[in-house]
Image (cartoon, rainbow, N blue to C red; front, side):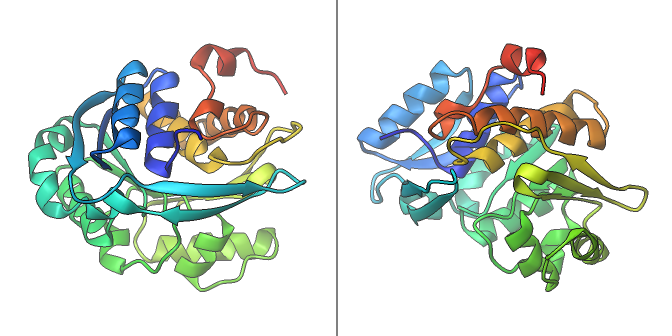
Length: 269
């Protein structure tokens, strides 16, 4: 058993890369929840808004990894799906103080929409990693600064099947037209496509021997946020994220695979 969940993996990745992060989430009042809280504190994450649910268990997932290092995940969301807009009233201070907000879809969509609208109205950069894949409203998309779908998620949002570079660009263009300023479609080992009104560029991935791709996307997103908060360009931030996730896939596990900043800084393809 290893600590995981998308939002937690991203929080740990940010902390290990030197980011200043406050994590807002809900765990069960059980051994998994207590262990998670302790691990977050050990990573240097601000846990002031890690909420405990006394009615529902902590979220858990069963992950299988095949001979090609690809993973398949079955999730029991538990307390994650009980993080409601009313809970976020207690975390308004964290939203107000943040420069950027990173979210995923392992919490209720109404919570994602509430935070996105609140944060965008305050001029914050709202970044959404749209996993687990589901339809998204145009109102939500217009509140985003950046969205980071993988190919499957990009297909669901855009309605365009991605089979090659050209179709990936068409999908990114469609998502952008729905109101998102910046689109980054992750392409696994091939890297990522960066698209906005001024940029349409593929950023190559790093060639490594993959052992386990679990949490690679989460670590990519955490690193991307760190890059943006260090005032790197979007392209440079994506390149930094590709490098960080390349290190992660050479290791087994979720949070355990997230590299530290010194490892990323000395990594060479």
